[in-house]
Length: 268
Image (cartoon, rainbow, N blue to C red; front, side):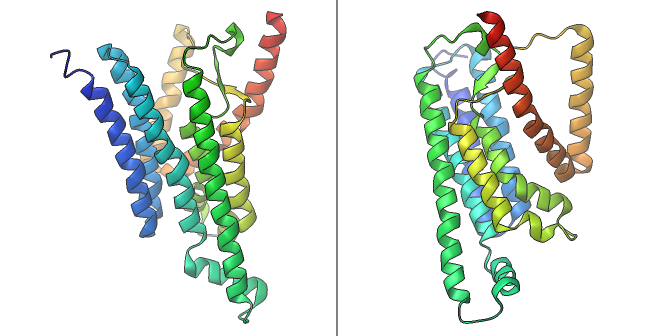
């Protein structure tokens, strides 16, 4: 393999992530919600793999890092907001919800227009926060952080932020065929998670990073068992498994803050 061809492989993986992110918006346009979420998940998988491929081939570059950020912005900053907007603003679903609230009156069009503006504001907010997170990450690539930052991200990574924004839809896919259907798709619930995801991405709040974690043999076996259980869960009941993963990640945020503050105190 010539040196000229090697850099093409990780860049091609990044392009795959971008392609799936854009495809998610196409799926959302046609109302295929499960496939739209799956496309963003695949974008996250290829986003994880491009760095691995680059390091394995020893062809990491500034160009690859910039390309990765552009792909992340589309796949995890724009696509999730577009998906959630289309899901929540689905014409039939919104009319049904509004009729329950205001009745089939002449005011319906007014409430419809008002809701469109509010939800589109959430989409813009999520995109802007993701762009801010990625810009800060790029500017800090050559900045050495204190040792207590080793096992932490500054803010929520873009793929995890996308997952938080999609959490109401994932819950709906898992448990939507019951009385909770309208709760998961409600204006307040969806708006909260979109704004929360944006704030967490743009923030400097420490969140756990397992990338540099060195595990002993016992812990490695335990992690392997958990990963195997997760794969089995994804195959047998994907939406319930992703819902549980989302809850675990939400719990990890305050836990990570506590651990970070403890390590920071000890380093002084």
